[in-house]
View 1 (tube, rainbow, N blue to C red):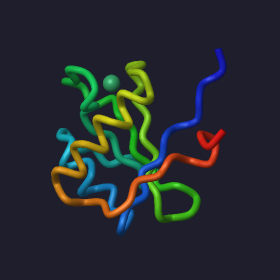
View 2: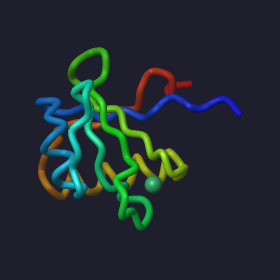
View 3: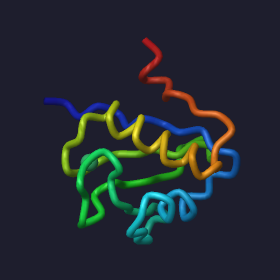
View 4: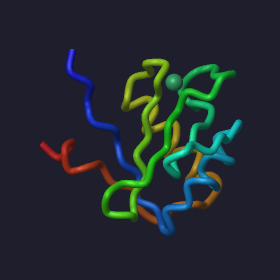
Length: 97
Ligand SMILES: [Zn+2]
């Protein structure tokens, strides 16, 4: 099964650290990505990866524990919206079909 592309959150400042902190258990990665607890399942070992998109104004989210990508996307969107971090949220171009 081919992995689907990650979903994309369009952020006002691309601040991954603050998003990871909102989700809990933030862990910095070597490549300026972050791991955090996945809000779509009971996640004690952070399995959600957060990366800045190529356009530098979006955040890619992906749950390595295998959560449905729409569940992850909606749960992250809800969490960050409650924290007031985002003005706009968009799907990545791959999802536009
Ligand atoms: Zn998950």
